[in-house]
Image (cartoon, rainbow, N blue to C red; front, side, top):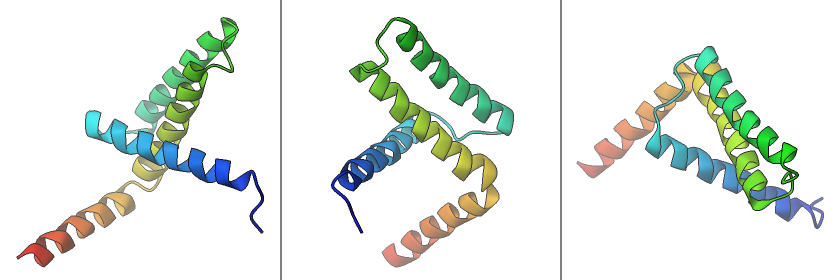
Amino acid sequence: MIGKNDYNLMDFSSTIVDEYIRARMKFPKMASPHEGYAIIKEEVDELWELIKQNKGKSKEAADEIRQIGAMCLAYQLEVILGELYNSSEESKSAQKENNVQ
């Protein structure tokens, strides 16, 4: 059963996906667990700085939370699933090319 707060969850989830897509248009995929950890840690450190400035409930903090969520999604897709995810994306591209011809 969907409750009244579930719509906020769905909205939040979609903003994470949007942020992931935006980041991938700007930056390359994560190349390793070490790189993924460093990226996520950088985002968490930026949130921590806002919290220390008593801005933990600000718009900037909300932006950092979305970036953290997007980078966690990136870690799952690109590092943990890795080749499975990449081959799926390549397969989709090949299907699109075949449909165009």
